[in-house]
Image (cartoon, rainbow, N blue to C red; front, side):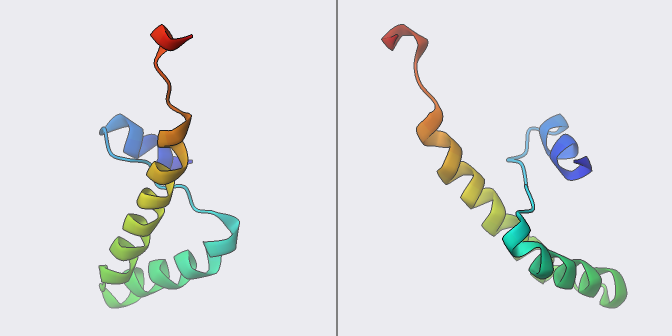
Length: 66
């Protein structure tokens, strides 16, 4: 929830860690914390942001059309 809140506070597309990718997130986070290698975590966040956009944009509608 912290990542979601921080993204929304800074007008960044949210990152929601889905259960099916939680292991991948944990691997990327562990590598970032222990090896200072953030490339995997950045790539993971970009992938999840793209999924969020592709999932939510079709839900947006114009109130004038109602």
